[in-house]
Amino acid sequence: MRGRFEEMTQKKTTTVLAGDIGGTKTNLALFTDEAGLNAPLAEATYPSADYPGLEMIARDFLSRTREEVDGASFGVAGPVVNGQAKITNLPWIMHEARLANAIGIPSVRLFNDLVALAYAVPFLTDKDLHVLNTGRAMSDGTIAVVAPGTGLGEAYVTWDGAAYQPQPSEGGHADFAPSNDLETGLLHYLLERFEHVSYERVCSGSGVVNIYDYLKDSGYAEEPEWLAEQMVSVHDRTPLIVEAALDEDTPCNLCKTTLEMFISILGAEAGNMALKVMASGGVYLGGGMPPRILPALEIGLFMDAFRRKGRMSRLMEDIPVYVIMNPKAALLGAACHGITAYRKIDGRAR
Image 1: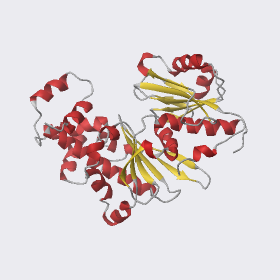
Image 2 (image 1 turned 90 degrees about the vertical axis):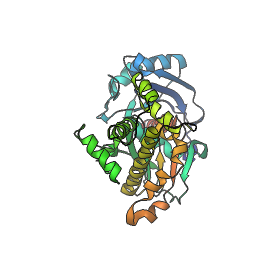
Image 3 (image 1 turned 120 degrees about the horizontal axis):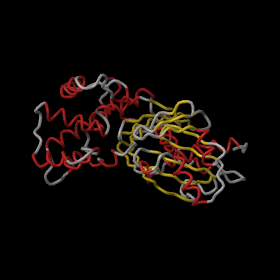
Image 4 (image 1 turned 60 degrees about the horizontal axis):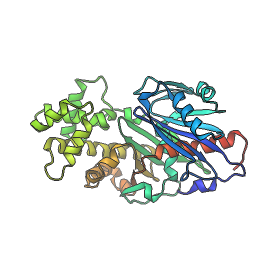
């Protein structure tokens, strides 16, 4: 599966602008098919909110590199419909044709950031991954990608006989299905607050906060006074909860239970995704949260929930599970997409 990028050799070098566009930061880099993914010609990170749109960021980056670029591929944190995208947490609206004209590049492609991550998966190496379950991967089997971060992204990758093809999914917005009494209580708690309770409501950064509030408000565990004081002064409570849960000396019981519940739900949903696409090639956990909570993922709650599929439990044992440790995986995926797409556009055969 891995190493197929090296097969993409051409007589004429293809240069692409790749981007991982998020609400917090925008990562841009120039790649060539000649140098490969490990040797970008240039790379930079910009604070997204400091700019009115991607055009200004891209123009600044390209002005510094002065390279002739064949095309651009941008993975964006938001839905892409008919070549138009809006970043979920920014007032940016992007259109492929207008963007190409604004930055002076022949062609621009926009696609969801989870699709970008899925493009990267077949090219990740052992150093990019942490193994949670060795399993027995089937050659050219379907691969599932589950990425809890600010939201819950999902995608999958299929083999068409010649290459891996990433497929989009909005599975993170499917109905949350509790698997025990405590999770059933969580569902009822959230149904009083939201019209629809999806897995993203309980299996993401905001999901951690929802679980925390449920356990606190239901009286399951008490919020320490010191933590309550810190919670008031922060915009995002998730890092505080995770940090207090992982504290080896004095872990907060409420936070520890919150993280354990989150991990169990994540394991169950990763298993659901594996079953739905028959992920015999493995399940890859992306997003910002899995690397951050890696010690807790290894304890066993995750894999217990992943395998607990009744008559399909034995099947789940054989599915490999990895944590993507490379924070630039989505950027590399955008580069993989771009090199393939723009090589085809200018007629260069494989």
